Image (cartoon, rainbow, N blue to C red; front, side, top):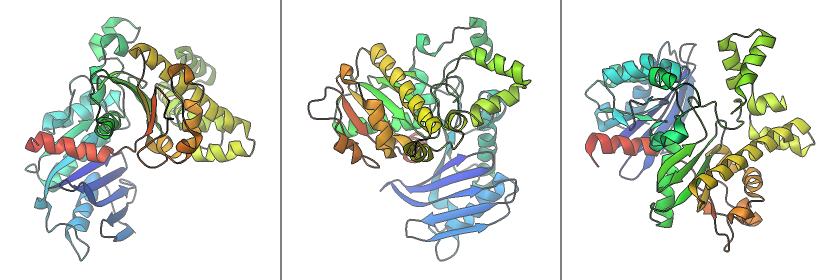
Length: 401
């Protein structure tokens, strides 16, 4: 059974076609510069690769070009699109209405694109547009499922997700902590229990999804009890271009001093802060590590802030859960940077965590435990696979298996 997974942005459309019987990625690629000019890069499991310019006025044309690549020519991977039995869409924000993955309907598209627009202004509208375009190209008879970044975190108790503002704003506008990267956090949770054979009941995990966007979650008994991102993906700790959690008065103070509009301030905090804003060099952790090695103070400062803030949150989660059994790293930085993993895990002996330097250095880009044999807390690297999680949800919801 083949399932197509879609992750759409305002000017991009990432895709994977997965054969669910084997979990192999049959084809994958990226349509980019949608609404500007257009370019597609595509490769297949058999080794075929292509990249070329093509006009993408809207997401519809991107889907049409994708269908051609999948179904036409000597490098086609399906005879026709009827072989694609279902389509799963990544969606950023489901508010409080969508607490789990859900069949795509006209009502859902309207909710995501209009009603919940303000909750995810950069992501929700284009994802709604992409779902509608996908229906046009593949037909409404092809079942589609929306998989929400927020859904896995819906198990948080009120004391964890409420903000200390007047309760009426929660009632009127659903302002609360939602959390993001939920599909990744859910995949890692599921995979950890598969690897270890442990029972979720009584288990306490801290999952560190670290990349250009980063978040932590506290998972107790297999369910999220807290997470670092909030109403939007801006909250938490310093990231590639996001500031993370700051004193709210900083926002009004800078707006007043610089004469910024709310939109300009949001842009500053989301796109010009974090690693980029602190270092003045780059939003990429690898660039900062290289610059810090050459003695660049601001690059080192950005990395120190990153690891320090993660330590504080992880320690808080251990306190909230009454301990921790495993700390798990995933995402681009979490999976690939032994230096950042090592710094985050250093001086955590008070929690019972002890890691091996060589074990850590050899743990990148694979499933590996890098805590020592006598450590009371496990430390793991588990690469994430959000696309597979979306595909699995899609199959379960559409076909009940």
